[in-house]
Length: 355
Image (cartoon, rainbow, N blue to C red; front, side):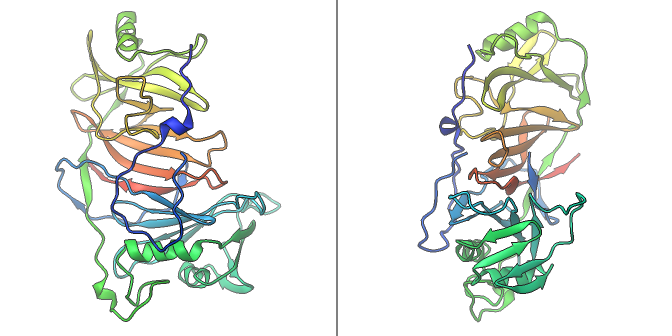
């Protein structure tokens, strides 16, 4: 009998001391996807760092969040009443005194020929072209935003911009978008250094695992996959000959939970991970006493996990992990906790991978 993983039981418990933008109420998050382009990041030595992804906040029809490098993104949401076209927009600001905005349009931005038109933004009838900095300034007090593909609500946009000002240390400076002041740009703190993860190279492994090894993994993981579902493990080989295994273990709507193991010969051990996958702080499935991932797979040198909040893919958590020789290390996390039409997730954690 399949364990059905309820979305409410899979919420990611994120710890953060991030400040509130203003008195606008924060909505509790409900739940790999496309994400905004990431700027180059400075990195520090590979000291053990416990990942603490940023939290997401919702202001009206916008969700906003920042990663550990203080790159902040605000993502438009379709109105709660379902009104409006399917067009979405993500606005990302780089950290530091010279941090600029970058805009990325989402669904609904193709013309009659199926091509993506050049981005042009109009706020309250004023054509801003494709200038993302001008767009952000206009959104602060705007009411209606038009993008290729439709009209986007600006309800809550000013609060989201204010939140970014606060998170990046811009409040009271000339670089702020909403919380402006007289302090010079040099008073804005630089981008924090990103952790470095030493990555081992993985190679594909296509041979069939012994039945006894598979049986041991299923027993240790307390696997309970419905009859007829594919329980074939995914396997990659490390440089020292060990096998990293994703063993399908349980399933819920849209998601297959895979328990993580390290195998050498007949020796089977649960893999160690420095951060939980999926929505739950205890892991992808609290009923499986082994670290696990959701819809997991090996993609070259990384392990991917993509927990979908619903079938449309407009909410969930996308993650990548790298093997450092002893455990999996979180190298990226992108999230969307509001199931409201935007499939371009917000980055909440980044690390730099090095051989």
